[in-house]
Structures are given as structure tokens and as C-alpha cells.
Amino acid sequence: MTSNSRDAAKFIRDRILEMHRIGPNVGSALSIADIVAVLQFAVMTGVGNVGGDRLILSKGHGVSALYAALALRGTIPARQLENYMKDAGLPGHPTVGTAPGIEWTTGSLGHGLAVGAGIAWAMTRRGESGRVFVVLGDGECGEGTVWEAAALAGRMRMANLVAVVDANGWQGYDRVANVLPGDFIHRAFEAAAWTVTQCDGHDHAALTSAFEANADDSPRVVIARTIKGRGVPELEDRLESHYFSITPAMLDALRMDKDKSS
Image 1: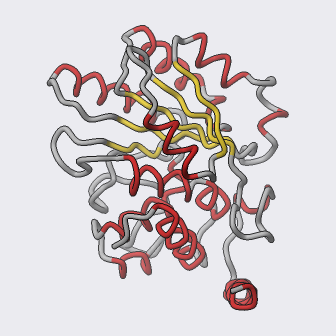
Image 2: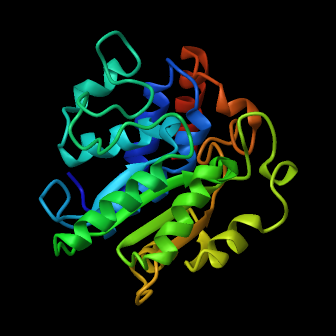
């Protein structure tokens, strides 16, 4: 196992490509590889222990990135990645009970922040020091339940709650900019009394600094600007990568390109 988030991100990306020979959403998983790597290997503490940091992957369709991180941590056997989206294997969305380290079942978008707020509030009431990180997609922020949860968390000053918006600019069928107005996400979180930080979602130092920032008595959101399909030029910033599966021929071609560049 490595504790270096950059090495972890490389491992996660490589495993994502292997896993997505079956199943869609490879672009969404590659988009959050750096975010998951920094959270799991540079920021979160006490993971798996009572009172430790918790992670809710609200944009559940990117779960292969989380599975890869859990395998690297040794939380699940690495061989389990080979059964991604196969019968009785790892499902295509986080499902509690199918693998250790999956904190909540997600898939229907817009509910993870409410779950995270509930957990954060319960941890405060129990006197626990852990934080709750919730990873959302920017397209997911079109769901009204996100803002109901954000308003409550801001009103209750849940300083142990950190939302991370994977701002890759895409929804399932269109650019987010064609659906949500301007800097809506930033302004909406500010209006809900959150502390807002924006950064490059592939810059590990910037992500670490943003996640560790002290916001005193307010919940925090890190709007991480990312590229859908990051790390694979053929997939980057393409809508097709949302529903795309890696074919064996494409995987071989990607490996050959990687060998040439190494």
C-alpha cells in the first residue's frame, strides 16, 4: 500500500480502465480519481473507526474510483475489482453491504448531501471529532434535494461537513452550463451560509489545502474544477465517456500509447 496520493491516483486510473471493459461512466470515474486519492490517502483520518472521517459518494456512478482506492488501502481484496458489474460482484453504484468502506447506498442523484448532513449532525451530538466528506457531481447540483440539505447544514452550522463538487462541466446529456445558470453552484452554497473554495480538481496540493482549511463554524464546499475522462486523451471532456465502455481493443491501444510515452 502507498500513502502517496499521486501514486494512488495513478493506481486508481489504471484500475478504472480495467474495470470499465464492462459498464458505463468511465469518464465520471476518471474525473474524480484525484479527489478520491487525496481524500483517502492524504486527508481523511480514522477511516473505518468509530468517530473517524467518513466519505459519501453521492455521484454513485463514479464508484469504480472508490473501489480502486479501497483495494489499494487493503479494505477490499484487489481481486474483487475483476468482478466489477458482474453477477454477485461489485455493483455499478455504491451499495451498503456489498463491500467494506461503502458508507451509504447512492445512485439516485441528489441524496448524498442530506445523508452526509445527517451523519455529521449525529457525530456532533455524540461528541465525535470526525468529518464527513460528500462528493457530488456538478450536474447533480440541479437536484432540489441538494439545496434542501445545504440550507439545513448552513443553518445548523455543521462545521464537520465538507461537500466536494466534481465540476467537470457535464451532465448525462449536456453541458452543465446549458442547464444551470452561470456560477449558480457557487452562489447557492454561499446563500446557504457555506464557506466556498474553488480549486483545480487535479492539483493534489490545492485539493489538500482546500480540504484541510478551517471554516470555523460553517460547513464547507470545495468546488473542484475537473476534466471528465481525465488521464485518457481520447475520453477527455467528451459526453460519450459518460456511457462509454472500454473495449479490449481500446485498452490495448491505451497500453501501447502508455508504453511509448513512458
